[in-house]
Structure formats: C-alpha cells, structure tokens
Image 1 (tube, rainbow, N blue to C red):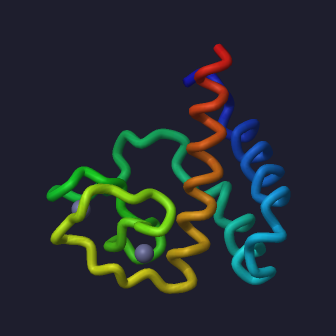
Image 2 (spheres, rainbow, N blue to C red):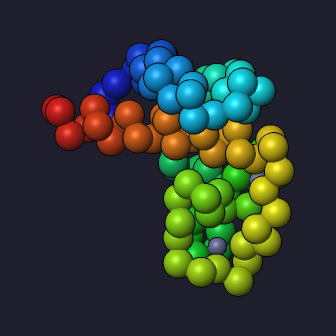
Length: 105
Ligand SMILES: [Zn+2]
Ligand SMILES: [Zn+2]
C-alpha cells in the first residue's frame, strides 16, 4: 500500500458524504469523525481468533455483520450499538477505497 493514509482518509470522508442520504445525520457525523482513527493497515488490528474477521474498534467484540458478513461465527455476539455502526461505516469506507486504489495501481 503506497497511498498516504491522509489521502485515503480524505477520500473515505468524501465517499461517506456521498452516502449521506442513506445514513442518519448522527451516524454520519460519528462515522466521519472516526475515519482518521481507522488503522491504515490490518496488521496488528484485533481480530477474532475463531473466524479471523476484524473486530470492531468501538466495542472490540462485534464483527459488523450488517456491513461485512463473514461466515457464521460463534464468537460474534451481534451486539452492535450506535458506536459500533459508526465505526463499521468508517472502516468500510476506508477499506473500500483502499482496495479501489490498490486495483488502480
Ligand atoms: Zn469471529
Ligand atoms: Zn462493536
């Protein structure tokens, strides 16, 4: 990954703003604020030892099933709260854009 994180974060924020109509205003604002806190690499991120899914940065437990459906995991509590939803929106924006950038190179 050669992109500077700041470039990805700016693109992720712009991408989230294009989806504003499908998100509540509060959720969008929270997700936008969380974008710069998403690690730009998966290395070292906490992950589920049962299914290897990345774990939520808000609660540290949930798998964000509504956005990134993994196979069923017995360790996932499906206990997403509002903070979790915002974190997963930010995570999804950052990684969607990173993969797009990687394909363009
Ligand atoms: Zn899991
Ligand atoms: Zn969570």
